[in-house]
Image 1 (spheres, rainbow, N blue to C red):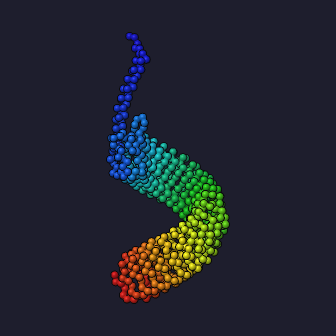
Image 2 (cartoon, rainbow, N blue to C red):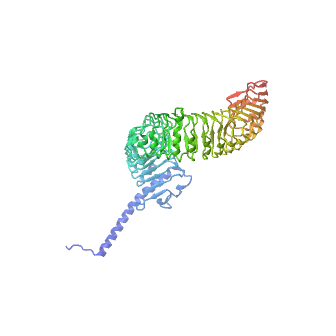
Amino acid sequence: MKPVSLSFAEFRSCHLLLGIALALCFNRVSSTTNETDRLALLAFKAGISKDPSGVLSSWNDSIGFCQWYGVMCSRRHQRVTILDLRSQGLFGSISPHIRNISFLREMLLQNNSFNQEIPPQVGQLRRLRILRLHNNSLIGNIPKNILNCSNLVILWLGKNELTGEIPRELGSLLKLREFLVNGNNLIGSMPSSIGNLSSLEILYLRENNLSGSIPQVLGHLKNLQYIGFPVNGVSSTIPSSLLNLSSLTVFDASDNQIQGTLPTSIGLKLPNLEFFSIWGNQLEGVIPPSISNCTKLDMLQLGDNRFSGKVHSLENLYNLSVLHIFGNQLGNGELEDFNFLCSLTNSSKLRYVEISRNKFGGVLPTCISNLSITLMGFAVGENQIYGKIPKEIGNFINLEVLSMNLNKVSGVIPSNLGNLRNLSKLYLSDNNLGGTIPSSLGNLSKLIDLLLAGNNFHGQIPPPLSNCLSLNLLDLSNNNLSGAIPPQLMGLSSLAIIMNLSRNHLTGVLPPEVGNLRTLTMLDISNNLLVGEIPSSLGDCTSLTSLRIGGNFFHGLIPQSISSLGGIEELDLSCNNLSGQIPEFLTKFRSLKLLNLSYNNFEGMLPRE
């Protein structure tokens, strides 16, 4: 038998027929598998109870499912690879049929209101690389079979209502780079299996109920750049193994129960740190001098611990913008305590220096005039500082907060503080300051809080303070101020928290303009030399919860308008010359906790009710 011979034309014809046959076969298979995707998407849609933007209205048979909103398919096989319905306000549950979208690589459902459990069927999506479910209301445990998603690179589950422990099975996700479960209700300790995640770059566990110790195995994760587990109950010490993480840029363990000391070589071993926050723990000992080697450091937050001793030079922290070391036992009450402030003159980006509630003593050095002009907050309250307020502070035109309360500062308030047009909070109370309150403070149009109580200021309350149209809280109590209360001050409708002028030598009447303070919650003008009748306009201050006018020389009746103060909790009219009957409307104040009418000239019967 002769061998079969095909011409080129016959060969080409056969090849074409074979191609058509294969294409028909492939299309039949493709059609079947595509139908699985379509049905799974419709099942997902059925689990949505609320679609405020109507984004799922396109999910119907009028167009192919690859054209549905939020659905992306592969070009060749037309299989669903991405489901992106982020930030659409969707309510409902994630359908377990999601498992049938077997080619899914990215599921992006963040910023919605999914409120059921994460279906365990998600673990069957073997090709899944990115799963973002953060900012929802998901409940239940993190599915253990998530370990089957062996290609998972990004897992974001933050800001939900997840409970239970972090599953130890998580350690099987060897490709995982980002794991975020912040803002949930997770309990237990960090599983040691996290040490297997050799690709991990970001670990963010903020605001849960985690306890136990920091795993030593974290030191094995050489690619780790970000560790954050603030606002938990993690205890024990900082393991020395963390010093192996030379790529680490962020370490945030604030608001936990961590004890012990900081490793002395921390600045040498972690040279790439940009953010280091451990405030709100129980750490003690000295702040390691090596911290100055972290030349990339932007934020250093060590507040509310038990650190003590000297703060060494920080001269190499060129990029530092925030220094928080408040609430410790730092300093020795000596002149040298503030030498480290001079080293901060190299930090050209410095914005906040907060060293309040320590044992720093001595005079503020003149070198602070060389701190960066970018300075926005300077807080040195509750220390042992004496001497004068450096007038150079008036040069920091970007300053928003100046706090020097509870020290031994003397002298006068420099008038050039009135140049600080961005200042919103000025705290100078409980010092030994004297002189008059400078009228230039009236230039501070953005001032919200002004606390000058507990000093030796004399003279009148400067009327220009009424130009501080943003003022919310004013406390001038416990001084030697005299003269009348400026009526313009009572026109500051912005005053919504406290006006405290008590324990001074103020004279004259309470201006009727007081009725403009409709949002004020506390008014204290007690222990002055005020006279006249209680103005009826006081009844317009309907937000008052505390009214103290005792220890003056007010006379006449309690005005009927006071009955409008329905939310009053404290009412002190004692030690005046008030007369007449005690009004019955006082019995109607259901929130009243303190009522003092003693040492007046009232007569008649006490109201019965």
